[in-house]
Image (tube, one colour):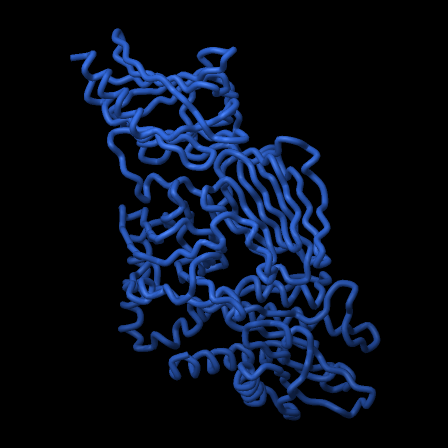
Length: 594
């Protein structure tokens, strides 16, 4: 019986495995998935062409597979399973000259050793256990909006394999408007963020180091931007892009998760990634509640996809480089649910026909994404207590029924609004003696922040203290955060000291009504000269994508108005008027179905 089983196992493996590695295949690391049903050996070689032998032994019961022409860099490692029919797997360098790596599978019964399958995916060998088929729980995480705990490099051979493995960067290739980063292991990205003075966008790769320190340094791009590559800490590789337009830079993940492309999306040579020119279409969108604290959205495609992910506040965006916008029908059909709030599909850029999908998700949920080994399935994993969300919703519904003022209670719920306090730091703005525009502008901005947050809005401040922020940085912050509205607060000045009053500026057509609403409320709340609306090409309202206005709250050059502008009463009245104007504009937009 044992001989018969051995023969069956050998034939099964012989049929399923593809030829792999001419020359030695260097296995750098090992990982398992959450289900403990797959083992991945990540490595690299000039070409893939492996041969193998399989066998069986007793006392204890075990099956082994010898991989020829392979080198196991860790030398020896043991994987112990808690919830699997196979107890453990030992991987070791079995021989040298020629090089040979052996995997030994231990189990309590012969049946548990059946159905071990070996397949190749890019530079990875994958062992499927227990007749396992790939699903969302078998997908390695490649993006997380929360930084992981400090990675500790364990030296003991008897360790449990981490949920994700070390990634070793082997090449950094400079392109016209970005960098192509390739390596071995499992790519995992953190949530990008913006730095100012100068404006920069930061991409962090978790559990990542470089094979050669010569890869560190600054890479000058032909479009005038630059990308610095450096080791932020022992286990985080950081890419800092210095650019006036950080919102244009995204990190696209290759279909085999063995590389990323940090690139300006306006570059027409993004086809450097594999599969870029192989079109894929959306086949299915599924939503699956695993438990009260774990939920999945799975996206199935016809071909491997190249994608980029970005989380901003209560929104989550995925761009697909080789999926046409016209294939968005499955998203349109997907039902809205409590925690997801529906899908919005759009074109990646105004000049592109590629698909971009926006998921409004609760900011109480942690978002992670993963990709199947064949690159045809994307899983979005949401963790957090849905029960708490439901309780909050129920409490809100009760409150709404009791007050019959649901829209008045939180009229700005889920709205992302950027409040821009003019000037700051070395830029004092308009000056009158020892009185500087930047000071009351900040105080009023902070009052507006407080008022808007009380109405449910998510507020992004371009500055919270007396610091300098460039005009480009203010715009970049708003565009990167995908803001719904932008308000810049200033004081006016004139050579003629008798001129006084309040005026509101707009530039783009989507901002005209916004300016009118705010100006009207300023006039209702403040006894001042109504100077009306102006269409102006101020940088911050000209370059933001959200509806944007700039409010000149009064003249610092007018003695009476200057005194009022530096007093609490005028500042509070101004802030209240701006908040009320924003609420009116948002409610008008909602009533019109916008």
